[in-house]
Image (cartoon, rainbow, N blue to C red; front, top):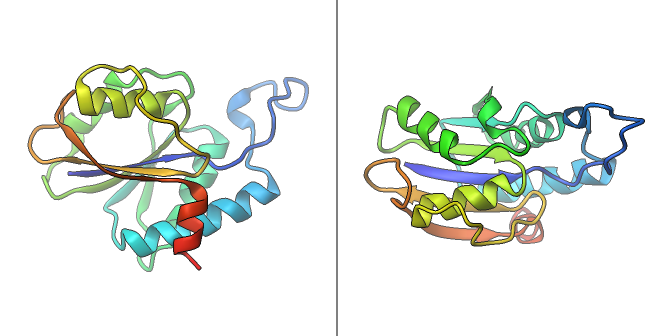
Length: 169
């Protein structure tokens, strides 16, 4: 299975008066433009996805929609609470293990920090200590050649939003 991890695009700053529920915080207007360009670059590198799975938070769901729209055949988007802000990485891998039916699956996860960094650490080493830094709307590609379990993945590539945007030009 190929697993593509995407951090949500640039979002409005935390403001408990404007968004008492942080999950309602949206992408900014520049964030939408930057994320759309990153999605175009991603779709040039990865021309097919079976599905996109997003945190239910507004900014991640917006990011998922912008990336999905960049594909000729836009993949369906699912919302998983396991990808929500502050969620630990173990349940994400477990959910994938239970639901992925083919070893050739191409799946994108759209989530938050530090969860995505912890997920990379868990997938690569079996330990959820963050191994990398994710830029907003940046991407990482992991491959699980056999079982979906901690320590079983291989990092194929990791790029920033700016790099994806340059690919999309």
